[in-house]
Length: 361
Image 1 (cartoon, one colour):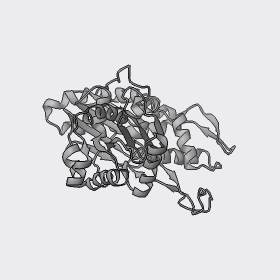
Image 2: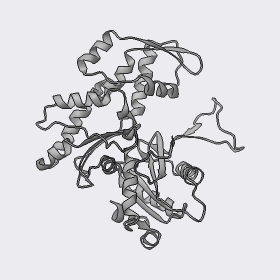
Image 3: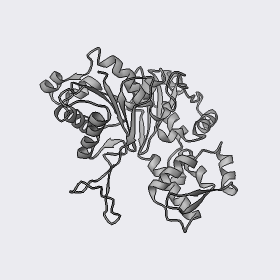
Image 4: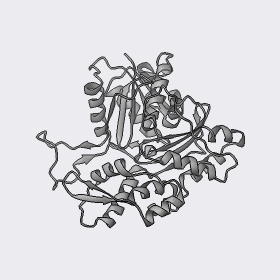
């Protein structure tokens, strides 16, 4: 049986058997609905906290919910059988606390009784997915942005940067902007999330963005409850916030400047190799026009070596940008498990959860 690869994001969990040139067979929301004592869903609007988020800003926060989610994924979704569990590889977000890694490996061996475990950092895996072992990963997820230089398969932690902003903050920004232009429409956050995915885009450059703010074609969209909303310049504000974080009320540099600053802290002999092998990943990075704007801003940046994006190989699945860490995990699983580089049940029984730091990182 092939090893299973799991990439649990704040918004979506990607899982499937390790077949590198295919998309993950399961892509499901990470957020869960709370069940009531009688087994019915807690849908009553007067009941607060009807949803549970096992993963917040990239890290597992609710372990009971995560256990339930993985139980559903592994046994119902992927067809594992109780007593005959296989091997599993998890993708690991930048700056994951050691305690989280230990708790995950403990849960997998003690609750799920797996036969083998491995974990690898998402930045490294996203580079593997495009056939690189060195480069820089710019991961714009639902709950965070990670910028990580990688040299010969090792994340340069001192130079890496993690920002606690992501797609969820852009959704809130869009809700705020749509609220101003549609004061009579009652919006909920899941509707805004869908609107963001359908309409948001990046202007060609800052000048083009300013023009959209002065005059912009509008479109009307009917929400599931029948309310009609008008969308115009707001769709461009979402993408612009990644290049001008002041739109989000943050005193921070835009994404290109952050990338260049991150790489400038690595030894100068590696600058070209890192900048010229930049990989974009994460759902937010798949926004219409984002890649073109990224390239354009990169060509204007003050650095003597300019960032250049790596294109994925043609044989890779479509939309690779959305699950490149999962694909990289599938590639790695084909190596670590057959070559016995993973944490075995014997390793775990002998050393406990701390073995994960020695074997995987």
